[in-house]
Length: 172
Image 1 (cartoon, rainbow, N blue to C red):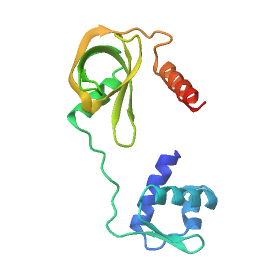
Image 2 (spheres, rainbow, N blue to C red):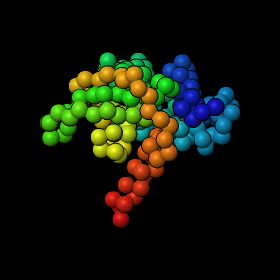
Image 3 (cartoon, rainbow, N blue to C red):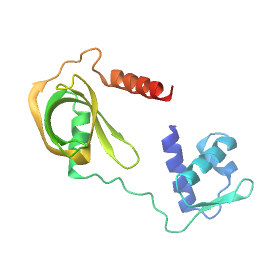
Image 4 (cartoon, rainbow, N blue to C red):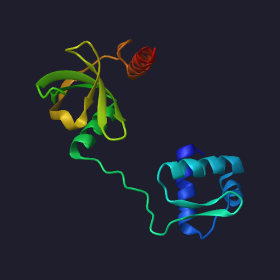
């Protein structure tokens, strides 16, 4: 079972029972009690209202529901672009951080959430480099009929490697 699925299951069990022990959860989910203790700590750190302690049991405050995943129209468009296997180029008008408009043709590679903002990671034809475009700054977006190639050095994996290197260099 994936960790995300296990965390979801823990919340569901806590919502449906009075007091739930780590031992019971570990038996049902087929993991160690220590794993359950870590999962509970992570859930609490993520603002899930769990009360209790090791050895006694846990409860979740009445009325707690997992927050729904809600996306705006622009976010849905970006999600759709990020999942299209046909690798279509996209033309967009984007408002830069300085307020100026910029027209770009990009190769969408991935959609990323940074806690408060969604970005579309892409290869930018104008800059000939990887760029992240904030979804809330995309003014217009049009899927072009042209596909981009699966070109070494311009893939999602390459973008991630470049970003890790940039972050590493900034810490030196």
